[in-house]
Amino acid sequence: MRGVDRRVVQNFDGLLFGLVTGLVVIGLVNLASASHTDVGISDALRRQLVSLGIGAVAMGVTVMFDYRHYERLALPAYLGSLALLGLTLVVAPLTRGSQSWLLEGRLQPAEIAKLGLVLVLARHFHRNPAGEVRRVRDLMWPALLVALPMGLIVLQRDLGVALLTLLVGSTYLALVRIPKRAWVAVALAGIAALAVIWLYGLQPYQRERILDVVDSGRDPLASGYQVNQSRIAVGSGGLFGKGYREGTQSQLRFLPTQHTDFAFSVLAEEWGFVGSVVVLGTFAVLLVWGLVIASKAKDGFGAMLAVGVVGMFFWPAVLNVGMVLGIMPVIGVPLPFISYGGSALVTNLIAVGLLMNVSLRRWVF
Image (cartoon, rainbow, N blue to C red):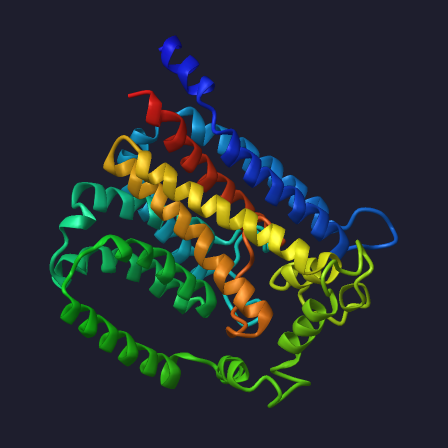
């Protein structure tokens, strides 16, 4: 056992650790600016630091145990996350139009549900390899696994996170080989589902936000206000930015929810195009390295686990940056490691622990 532990330590993935550490530090620096006050450290930054400590410990514990043991825990973790989502519907208060938080806003079960979903899908596609999927009916069981947490999140009235859950689950579709005509059927079903959601599932303000993507000037003082202010912040950053805590949009509080959904707008205003490219480039390297880890994994469960974690980071990054730039509707999806959010940070660090686990043990057995 000692020899195995020594080999794990010797093969520590410094690149993965460095990329994540860099993003977390950037996120903390950005949060310190976005939540800046004249009376010392802000409550948001203090809570984020506490969440970082919890997440770091959770990541370390996740790395300690061979990831193959998590295959046995995948189904209980998934069912536990569903129970948490159901409990939220029963006891959580309605906050900002959604019923998504427990423990007085400190715990968002939907974040935990994404992790449970990745574990159970990795387990499924390890036992039923995605490359052997030839028919749409072979996707019925994983579709049900995605639909259950997604449906509970929809009942919480958090359609943005529900969409994100669907996209994270859909990451595995890139690995299946069903015929082209089957993809046509999937596309038609998706269009029909979108039509039903538009007619019966969306609140009026949510429809307004989608229409604002097509025409951001249709209601600049109401539904289009957030995106317009975000675009001003991003554009005013120029090439090198205005400097730390020098952004007018953020420091004068023209930019709403600037420490959460629009944290990237603050970063772009202060550090400009160059700073934005550095951050997005770091994300890109992290995602590519995650796929490299998946390709080198020693078993199917490890490979599927790594693919799922990459999806957990890829989709919210795409949605958040698209939202900030006004090319996607405002749906309340935070940018991993950058936006404020304790549940999201802890969950993402646990996901990093899983990815690190697969990377370390590809040399061990």
